[in-house]
Length: 356
Ligand code: ATP
Ligand code: FE2
Image (cartoon, rainbow, N blue to C red):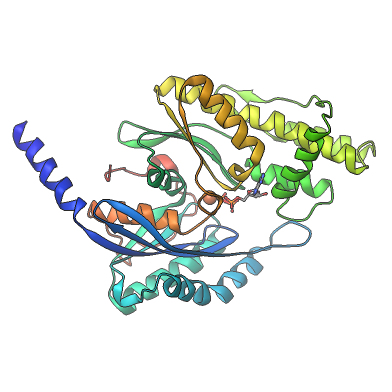
């Protein structure tokens, strides 16, 4: 027992005095990102965090065009990240990349870039799980053992650490909340991504003190579902009753109130079940001002801490890949080129967490 304690103390002491520079690459979906993350004496600093997002006027996504976007921008984004951090590849000790989950067309570009740079420059490689990275970035804000509400385009999950792994306590049974919001926005004639516009429109309706329009509220145990609400909304919009700017704003507000109440109900239940006192928000939808407000209120009522990273670390970004990459590197994890195949369907609870 004493030996184990001593070993742990020596290990922590060794890690605390390490200096590591990590080049990180993110490309699970619309965003291609690169970042230089520095770890020095137990502290993380994000030296640069650069990104470029594939956007469309009408919504929808063509995988081949998305891949083309990433191919066209990857060199510029990686060079930019290095330049902004005043570092060159010679200074980098590890290259981290998002290995999964995500869209094959997108993941492949980031993986090829990471692999090529690692081979050419003889730098170790680490493949990182994107969802776990959304959670781990919160440690730079002091999070110790949080519940994560991960609300992005494709993903909607409530995740927490339990028994050596990150477990998914609840998730969407159909579409991701961001995809739902974007699809609803498309019905209203808003471009992609619709989330930020809906945020703004809902705020205007709230300022006018518009009435809430009742919508299907769908929480099943620890899971949520959006398809029923989407069908209902499509019928409502098609009826022509919600064509004026004011009516559209009122609908946006009602959608936000319903959907965010659902997400926070399952988050709160996970916090109570796991007896955790921290909630972290992650994913692009977590940029929403009303979701942030509701999360803060819920945490205050539970006497818990609400941690909301800056927007640039909520949306898909490479800095979070770098933070997790460094943690895994310190735990002696490495990904050989043979092991670096993309994992589009990797699940959060597939990952063995040995860096804590
Ligand atoms: P992932 O691969 O993790 O699923 P993603 O590709 O969907 O991520 P993110 O950047 O995490 O990318 O999230 C994008 C989503 O966030 C879009 O659906 C967008 O509409 C939504 N979004 C962004 N800002 C807001 C906002 N203020 N309110 C609501 N939704 C928002
Ligand atoms: Fe994400």
